[in-house]
Amino acid sequence: MYVLRRLLDTLAPEGIVLDLQVIRPHPLVEVDGTVLCEIDGSSLFVGADAARAAVDLLVAEQLLEDEAVDDHDVRKHYIDGAALVTDFETGERKIPVAAIPLLQAVQRECVVRERCRVRRLRQIDAALHRGLGGLGWTAR
Amino acid sequence: MNRATVLDPEGAHFAALERVADFAGARVLEVGCGDGRLTFPVAGRARSVLAFDPDADAVEEARADLPAELARRVTFAVASATAIEIPRAAFDIVLFSWSL
Image (cartoon, rainbow over all chains, first blue to last red; front, side, top):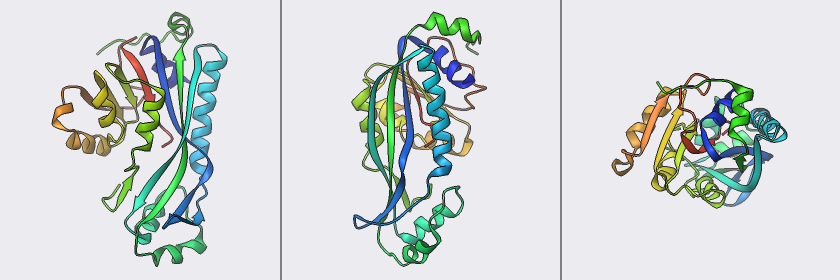
């Protein structure tokens, strides 16, 4: 919340916030347009849910107003299955164990497709949130 | 991200942003810019972009990849959203994507 209030302070009157987040369902791994497996996206959803809740709170406080929403798919392309497996070895999200040998055998492009949402929110009253936040930012 | 991996070559993220916002002439603050993947198309429309991220390596990559024609409009910074100092009421659009 602290960060969000700071960000609101940077907005000119009537300025807008664009909040881009991953959303459910879980990401899918596709090869040649066919779904090979699902990736558990829970670890990323935790952060996304928290960010959404923080924004929702500012909406509830009437500091921001929801104006528009756009849901869309985003694709991450890998040169082959091994590259995909390697990319997920270090992250919090894991490929299902049973799918790893299948993917490692794929020697053509693999795609991870996930759902994202962008929200456009407009600042309602700059003076009000300054009074609540009182952060006193200045240019360095 | 290594070169065997390409995130969103279709430009789906920026297309979605353009469907909900008009960047033309706007002063944009981008929070969590990473390697500048969204910074560059936004800067192509906006008056100016201040883009920051705590990941110094990612910001360095963004600086290196910044097209020359956008250089005067884009300022990159290595910083966290809790620490960076930014003037009040200086931006028309704040863009953040910290779960991506």
